[in-house]
Image (cartoon, rainbow, N blue to C red; front, side):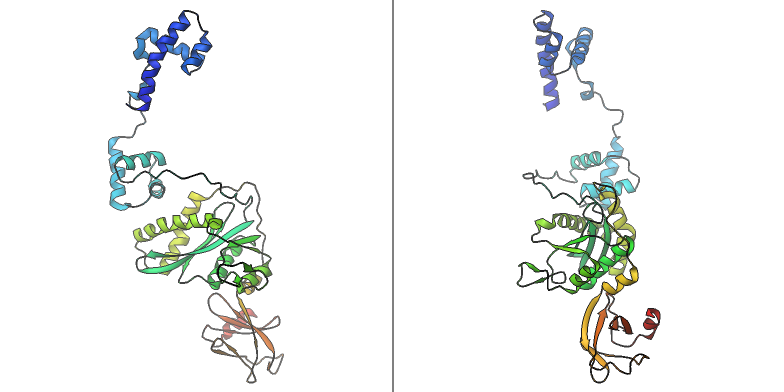
Length: 391
């Protein structure tokens, strides 16, 4: 016998005994109602129903009558068939989001119960001890997370997914695939955020070598010996915060588990196998839908984002290297020879210290102090058009 039916039978037995005590005026109506576990008004209703139909009048009709809002059997069967035919292996929350996008009107709980009853999904195991999560930042733009996840996002190909998201709202500001996470991918993620929203206050990252310098693997970060990325954040006034354990990055770790489950299935359903097409899908379909479903309102109104000059940002969010010009007025850089073209300011730059800037797309630029001397393609050849645009 189910618990609700057992409670109903118990209430019938107790009601007759309590009604007798109340009729003999041994207890007041309020006391009798309290003994039955109901309010005085409900107790009076029980008395009227008992006089009209006896103990059967106390039966809860919700247990014997079907609800007018109950879904037809055909709808339940069609739902399970839809799941089996196209979405097998998806978790219920993911399936329900697509069910609603395709016009479904039932609740998540109803969908979950129908799939569990049909044996399509199993019940989740009981959770362990309660653990208190770190509170979110109160305002958008106060703290951002950036992290990468290496995974087989499409069959036979291991890519890195780079995500930059807000701690206060879980909004994903930037999301794209690369072949390997590194300094360039981190610059691209930050640039997309700054161009769309502005400069933020702080950035939370792991201790990857492109984020931090460490004296020994797994040790404390060196906040004085900055990497290229650390130097750029320092120039922008963005505080960097290092995470010292996976638990410290719990919000990012949970987010990537969701992506590894959902995104793999969606890319497969869309027939996507190439990175360029996958990145378009992220921008046009997946990220907007993910933000709509998982974004949370910040605890406080307002924003910590501040406007930034985009031309300045481009020159900061790149790698900087210093070299001394050789006697042939050239600069050697990672196997390339960069010829400095003649200009009207100096005859040559022999023995001068110049700055080489490498941008995320691989292109190069040469600076002497604040002046831009030349632009180069990734192969080291002179880019005269790039110089005209910079001028």
